[in-house]
Image (cartoon, rainbow, N blue to C red; front, side, top):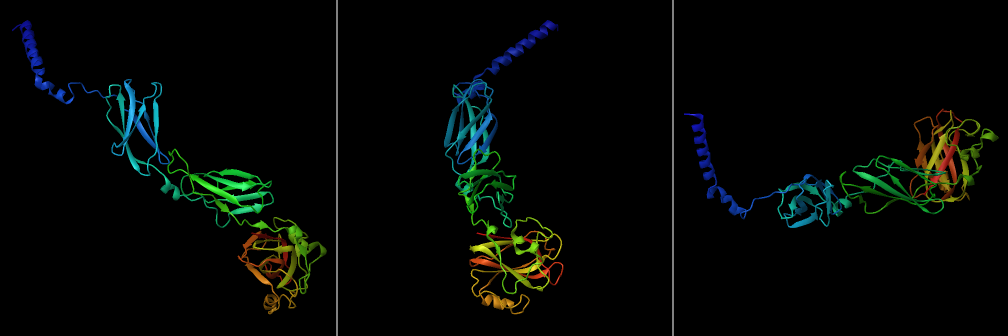
Length: 402
């Protein structure tokens, strides 16, 4: 058989195959498409979601199909939907905010459409958490350091905060300036303290924290209200302090080491003669007394700074009274009956203080709440770091009230 005859036979078989392939049965699927060809527009790509306050933002890459004219988003099992026009072809990133949602986990389905109404295959984004009041009620303002919430000095106040335990964005702080104006400051989540310069002593400091539930959130959530740092301890004005010399009070080593050295503004241990230095005529336990210049209510804190070397009190008592009428004790400070007599004459024991160091560094103690108002203070030294039987040395003492 020649090559020409073989080619003729092949062509005949191909013609038969084409005829059978165009049979009615091969086109039966058209009855499901109304006799039309199914068209699927290009679908959105890289769909993402960012939650917010009763709303969510969906974002995706625009379909590259030029026939796409709009998008539709469905949720709540397609009971709710939103339609948006496809952006200009030069815009590749598409986003839309879906508002008025409830606090719930959602699934969203997105389709792209052409002008004939053909829609793409569905693109889904699932388990999208929407936040609201339930989340907000779980938020608390950032905590101050309980043991050391603030430091107050002559030029302002420093607040100390704990590390936030969730996604804190900022903490807004409002305080009163010395001129009476209200100032605002912001503390970042990685900051643990903030300085409020020229704070007006005695006024409240307010603070309120802001959070996001997740890093991608589109809304910031705030705590329900401001907390306040109230009852801030205010330094008692030492410019009013005056030395006293009551019966059996210890004397001073010299005129250079008088009681007035206790309130000359030292911030650290100092040396002789810039100290109070007792004489060697009154054995320990001994006491000294001074006048705060006016009656002070709500004494709250005391600080003592020792000498830079020796004879620093490591155990002592702080006593107070409002009126000295009939208050002078007749027993020596080392008498077994001194405490009972002091109480009987109206003195109040504010605090018994014990230190385990050498007594030199600044040392603060919190006084008990509910103390009566008082004007006169007596310090009774029970023990010094050196073990000396007579000498006690102090660089500075300070009081604070609320």
